[in-house]
Length: 221
Image 1 (cartoon, rainbow, N blue to C red):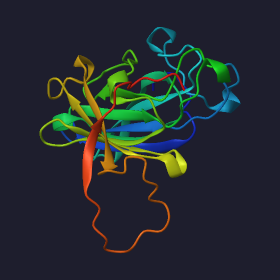
Image 2: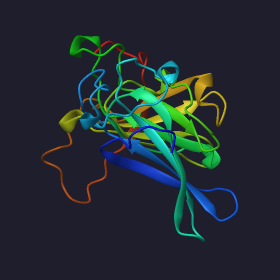
Image 3: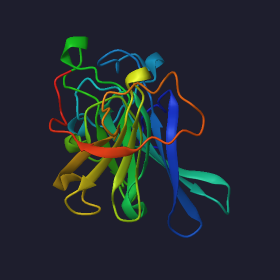
């Protein structure tokens, strides 16, 4: 309803209670078309205002939909975040204040994009139009899958990078304030931080673990 073509590649999403009989669905679009592929409508890249894009060439992002449960009717839909790429999964932010949308790619200028990718972004549930896309760099640059907050505001993240994937914990300086910075950690097997767990594991075996702090959350990959 904002005049943009509905983009392709629906992926991770979540639903919130909203006003009256309506709910709000915030939906990822894992668009994998080329950098800046907006001119041809057949690409179904995610549009929206140029001024809110993180990367001027980014073709992915999120769409927010309002649905009336009583009337069983879509009331409104609009681009809520744009200028990102490969928005795969994510999760609920602290106290259901919004959706954390996650890029499942670490591509950057070397691959033709305008900026580095591989970040999380926050989409407020209360947004009424496209919000400026601000990367949450302290939560790490990697091929993100899920990112979800617990009741204390600590966030847990999974990675989709094949056999080198990890499990992360992101502790913000202030609960619920994703842009205030924080500390990123990765789960490791004690005394074996580079352990490969993809083969040779015994069912039921206990592996003692520890959280290891990551010094460089935003590496040039």
